[in-house]
Length: 141
Image 1 (cartoon, rainbow, N blue to C red):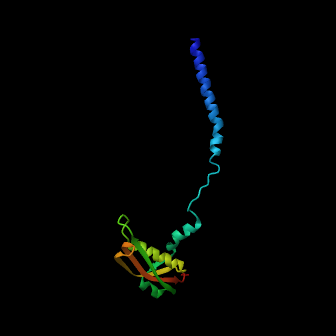
Image 2: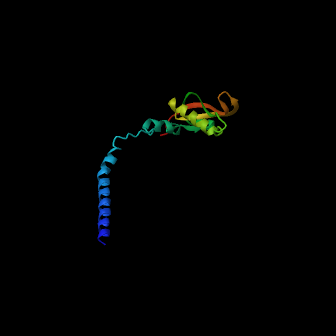
Image 3: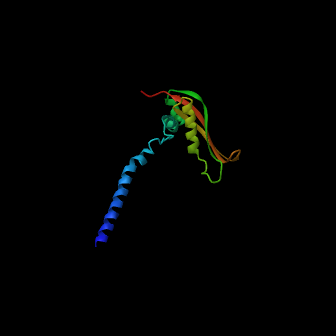
């Protein structure tokens, strides 16, 4: 019986010492992460670039008669499928890129004249290109 009690005390003491060491080492382990630097592409410039087309509205030709606007230039946007494993190109992506080009020119509106689909063009298996005009439309009061 005495032997059992001594071994229980030794096991308990060993567990206690192990826990004590772990508790003392935790700050050292945690401080190892103190110099960890986190870099992300989530900065203001990336947000502005991503949401830039949202500030450009697509107008139909018949809407322009009632608006005060300035013609800024011709724009185009392209959607290209470079590999068979990629999604097929679509006019929506091409229009979005055209809107981004209009925003780069200082515009807040576009008219899309035509979107055309092409096959087997240099660099693209399939391609959609949308053509239009960039506009600076006066704000309504």
